Length: 454
Ligand SMILES: *Cc1c(COP(=O)(O)O)cnc(C)c1O
Image 1 (cartoon, rainbow, N blue to C red):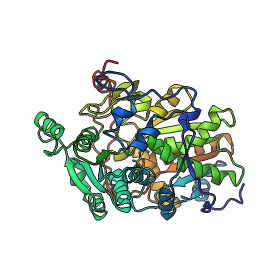
Image 2: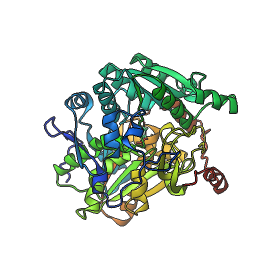
Image 3: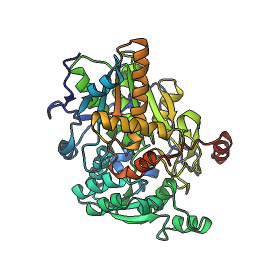
């Protein structure tokens, strides 16, 4: 096992040709989306005004295990995939651990994260349906950036509602989006009914993801030839992100390795859902029992401290209800944190797996995350995104446990992206002004009190 190269790339022929739908193999299926008016499961007809037809099919399909990757999407993937599976020899040596550490690096594209894997699929299906464009929200900007790249490739219009505080504080990602032709509006805005309402109720608000979702959905459903697309949480996004796990599995198979521990950061759950898909399949089928660990920030602990219940996906309450581990749709996490992990809920698939005891979850405070990030940058060279660094932190912790016990476990973690646009966070860490905000039980209980009665 020590002959393994530092980086393993699949050849084009070895790259997966189909996405894997873990739901097909789950014994307890994730709970369906509900219509907030009737409380009945959303039908394809009800979802059609919001989402592209082909994506609605993928969203509602709990039985088809494999979906062919369309040629156009595969060709786009070839521009930045396969992503390397890296054996973290330098980190192992530094930690003096007998553990074998691997990471799957998804930051090798201009958008800087795994989000492009689903953005290109969603843009493709929108184009195929003959649509003019798509709308979406973005927080820190990773998803908006990925989607604007995908839309420009597919020649689609792209309207992004960007959380106002990020719009103002992260001008560089905004300009990357505009470079790829997207229009970027700070949210809440006066250009939508829901935005006007939110601004009336909370003048001077700097916005939230839930609020930007409401605006993007309103524009999609009221503009001819437009649909809404979402970068995480949904089943369809986990499906597209399975490319991460399938490539990882194929690379490990070259050496006959099955991982003992698989670790990923969890915001809405898409990279983790994608990374673990084949390993969770093996676990469910009794083929190989890996430990699977979701890592979330202490400031937004939906799995570790939230409630498994139906909740709104957005603040404006225009979206369907999803059953998930949630902190309540009004939950506003501390403002200074890793943008991509600040969503109040968790994908319904991961929520069900967690509730079934098939997955573990831990939460970590951000100064510890940045200690791990800086250590990783110095040892392995890559400057990691704050989100990804949550997984690094727990991978290091597990490797250090192996050092104590002498176990040669194989640890695989997802390195979802790079952190070049997050240097204010690094600055706060270096200047020691970064705080570890951990919500009190009372704060979480207050937010959970607004859960809908289902
Ligand atoms: C968005 C993002 C995440 C979190 O999103 P998931 O849907 O939970 O995967 C993690 N890492 C990076 C770099 C991101 O941009």
